[in-house]
Image 1 (cartoon, helix red, strand yellow):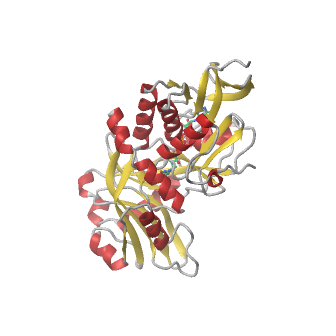
Image 2 (tube, protein in one colour):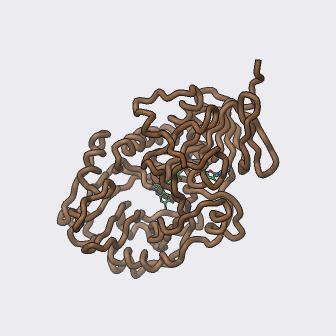
Image 3 (cartoon, protein in one colour):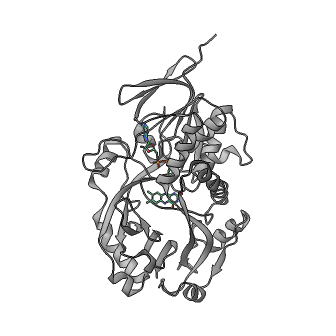
Length: 404
Ligand SMILES: Cc1cc2nc3c(=O)[nH]c(=O)nc-3n(C[C@H](O)[C@H](O)[C@H](O)COP(=O)(O)OP(=O)(O)OC[C@H]3O[C@@H](n4cnc5c(N)ncnc54)[C@H](O)[C@@H]3O)c2cc1C
């Protein structure tokens, strides 16, 4: 008879999704190891993997396409309150979430993403009341904001800003309280050993487990831990932070803004209500213009990107965007603008990957909504890892990985 290995399941990657996977496994009574580096203190001299969640705010809403993305977010978000109660870690606060875009896209069919009707129907299908505001009603409801003429919106008034660092801390707190072992290290190899796997870390430590879950986010292909490369793209994204001295003086909901003038796309990204950052200051956060302009493939490329600290070229267009959007007195009070490096990825299928790479190696990756949906993606992955089979009502086909 083959010998049992050290852990039932080892989760590689302690970001929102890995942490959620570990906590659901631990809640089920599994003997769980979770391994991932803590957030590095700075960028200069950085050598290693990076993450998509080193920030203070991510949208948590059900204004999504396709419908399954709204459903995953809804399932996840409804457990956030219970997670806070259980751990004492606060990581959400309420916000209006607006999806703003031209009523009709000049000269082209609306893409799947930028389609107000579809966003509204999806939200309603998962049971959330949202409202479609014409350009005139958008002006009436948010009189301090100046959107591009002819732009309309769908608004979800019970949306959340989710602090991704806080969410991760809450999941890890719950996981370790339920018996999971957390180790701060980077895994460099996963090899076959007996009926299970051996994990080896940069520090030289090593462990065995019956099943390994790789939850390493946008770094997944660069890590080389899987037998094949996943069909996904990874980008070095820049986040622009614009300081505001008094957040109470800035009336700004969270906005997914697709700003178009004639045939020209002027902005396509997220503008966040003011958030307090670890330096104690308040900033409006925007995704920078170069979001998908900086493809990265290897660990060395990721490290080199992080060391740049982000693209300062994104500052000027962001300030133009905010000066057009916000009242002149708010813009006049802007403090300094800074950039931060972030990693973002997208799967070629447009859906999360939750799948076996082989018999006892599972991968989970969601690049774009992996904070709002983290707890549900973790639950689904934990179920696959502990039982070896798919048992959810959403067909597994949707989450099957595509390999290169
Ligand atoms: C600018 C921007 C805006 C976004 N906006 C939103 C939003 O509004 N709402 C939303 O839901 N999502 C948003 N996202 C996406 C979201 O941040 C990601 O989907 C989410 O972070 C993915 O979580 P994860 O745990 O899979 O990956 P990550 O957060 O990247 O965490 C993966 C972890 O794995 C670790 N790791 C990597 N390699 C190894 C290794 N070899 N060994 C051990 N550990 C390893 C990393 O250090 C990291 O901590 C945004 C992303 C960006 C960049």
